[in-house]
Every structure is written in structure tokens, then in C-alpha cells.
Image (cartoon, rainbow, N blue to C red):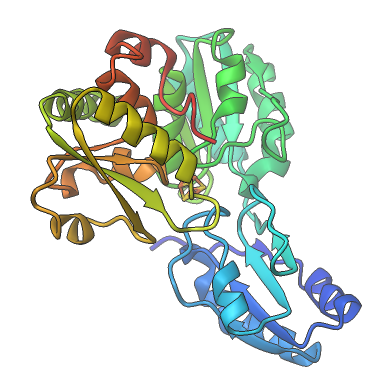
Length: 338
Ligand code: SF4
């Protein structure tokens, strides 16, 4: 069984912020992997003189800020753990606590070296949890004779950082490297990195202290995307999905897509929802295909669960004839997502 990893939860900062802001009611939001820390953090908040409330709803990213819930609960401070800030909102005072992992990456990076033997120039990417370890990993790779590029577009908080729908740092160096080394647990970000850059990606997982390639899974997803686009090309009635999570709402894009589909003589209906699930979409059997303007990963990672095609914005450009499939496969996904 995997040993439970601890994270720097910046408890002193939490206490100081409550004190400084004289907060009386604090809503704590944690991603799934950190939810178990909720009761302990609640005790800290209580000792600091505020009433803690833990949001028990799922939280998948910084786009999913519980602003509305904080307003409903009349919280005067929202504390969002595990992600860096991606959107701003003036409604509820909010602090972000990044939750860096207390785990060494050296062993996993060393184990990645045999997988990287065919390439000389590498790109390096990770999530905020391991961002402080990036220089150490880079040094290890340079010692092993590699040249290493770490992208920094300024669109994310840190050089080399990726989030599930923004791989701009990696894309910025993709043309200069033969492959990427991704440092982090799970396959979610690594698959996104491969789809965004279309380069081979090796994962160095510091939690499980192992390294592996993910090309097979990525090729499977790309084939699946082709089949999805092909099916959607024949669709007559489209549903355009508007995400209601604070950082996922793209109403203007949804309206534009609706207009463009209608110009192509397709039916297009707008749907607004917080959670895009197969069950929610099944309620609309007359819709042939959906365009997802919210989290693009729902289309890419959960495709097999949906009964109808659920396209990303870029894939919709293919349907509309604005982009070719070949161009998408050359430039990669996440070109126009934030
Ligand atoms: S939109 Fe999706 S991938 Fe992007 S941060 Fe939110 S949950 Fe993560």
C-alpha cells in the first residue's frame, strides 16, 4: 500500500491570514487527495477564532472555486488548498494554499533515465506540488548528459508548471525537445502533456518511486478522438454546454459556437450545468452531439462514459471546417483552452 504523503499546508499562514483579516467564518475547500486533512484544518481555524466549514463537494481544480457556496454560507474568507490561482473574483476574499508535497523526486527521476536513453534534449514539467524539486531534477538530467528545457510563458505561476488544461509552458519548448519528463503522480497531467505537445512523455512518479511511458494510452485517446469527431460530423442537433463552475464559464464562446453551428444549418441548444456527467447528458436523447465549453478534460478523459460525442472547443473547430484534423494532430490539444 502506498505510504500517505504529507503536504505543506502552510498552517501558520492560515492562522495569520485569519487574524489579519479578522475572519469570523471560513470555508475550506480541498481537492479529493487532501480532503482527509479537512477536520484537522478545521481545528486550526477554530483555534484561530473563526468558525470553520469544510466544503465536502468535489473540487477538481482552481477553476472550481466555491465562491457561491461561500456567499450562501456568509463566509468572510474562502481558503482554497492544492491549486494555484487561475481566476480572480471580487466576491469573496480568498487565499490559495498550494500544498507542496513532502516527497523526494530523485529516485523516480533516476528510474526514468533508462526510459529517456534515446533522447538527448528533454522538456521538464510538473504540477505545483513538486515545483520546488524541478531544479534538482534538472541537475540530475544534465549530469546524465541531457539538455533540459523548462518553459515559462508567464501564464501560470511557475516555470515548468502544468495544470490539467494549461500546458502552455511545455508547449512553448516542445519544438526544441525530443521528449518530456513529467514529474508527478497519476496519469492525468502526463496524458494532458502528451496530448498538448504530441511528444513522447515519460512519467517519474515520486510517490510510487517508479517511472514509465504513457504513449500507448495517449495513442488510444487520439484514436478515440478521431472516432468522436467523425461521429459528430454527421450530427444534426448539437448541445452546447456552459460550465457553471466559476473558472469554467465561457458564455461568449458558447454563443459563438451556437451561431457558427446554426450557420452550418445545424440545430444548437445551450445547456448550463455544474457537473457534466453522462447521466446529465442522457436526459436529452434528441441531441446528437455536445460541444463542451467547460473543462476540456471531461471530453478527453471520460469519453468512453458518454453515449454521445462530447467535443472540446478545438475539436469543434474541426467540425466547423476552421481547422483540419491533421493540424490538430500536429499542434496538439489545449491550444485555445486556458
Ligand atoms: S478546467 Fe478542468 S483541467 Fe482545467 S483546472 Fe479546471 S478542472 Fe482542472
